[in-house]
Length: 105
Length: 241
Figure (cartoon, one colour):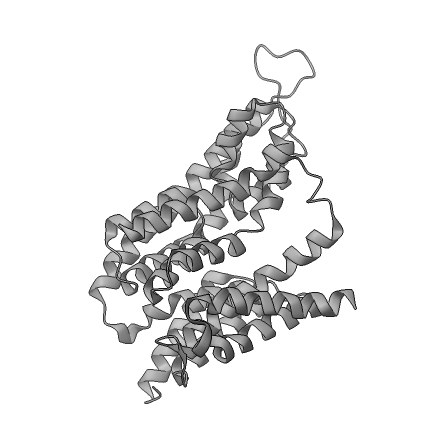
């Protein structure tokens, strides 16, 4: 029940963001300061979620698995070179498998 | 590339050239996006398994959210047991860009009634925004735009949701050693690689990442929102100095 409620509320939040400009007009979006702040949110969110997946174990800081770190770095580097997130995902998974294969945790 | 000159269709005035079919054009334009979406859908599906969601719960999330990155963030949040408020804050932050997309859609469909525009923005995502920006400058007719937009949405949503089902099934049947539990951070790493064009953006990312282990032990479920706020503050401080 909690899962469905969370998804429903998340959908409501997402729809509110999508519909905001339809209802409220474009004055705020035209503000340069708002644009600058919003541009910073995406990288901060993504970096925090990556760090959370790698560095937090049961809510506390923990030593990350070497294979996972290498995989994330490989995915990042691949997308910087290719611009393709799907290719980065595949490369990351391959690097992780190789790391496990050579005995890295 | 064909060099053929478009011929007027029967029934059109001499000299008039029929606009390309919005449906056919949408099918053609969405092809590359679909290729990239399928692995992402697989990743979201396998992440749902890792988070302990049932297939019904995962599909419910896919259909009501229609936003892959936010769905992945919610799934991860549920898997960590963060609680509803933390999941909603992360959703809002991940999807903040939709405010911009909504401003674009408000312009594209300005001739439609308000309730129609509200329905049209419901499935608005990165890909449809990019396609609309690309196509609608040359096609001002509201009906043409609606058909193109709805077809593009359908072309993106069906393979994305289907690939999530496949990812869920594969994820449930495959050993963890294959690394599918890493799908979420790998996709996020790829997305991050495309959002680091400015110095303040890079600073925001580094500060947010460093803040996670620093505040993780004391902030609990609020770790992510706090880390994100610190990251944005660090980036903004550099921008506005």
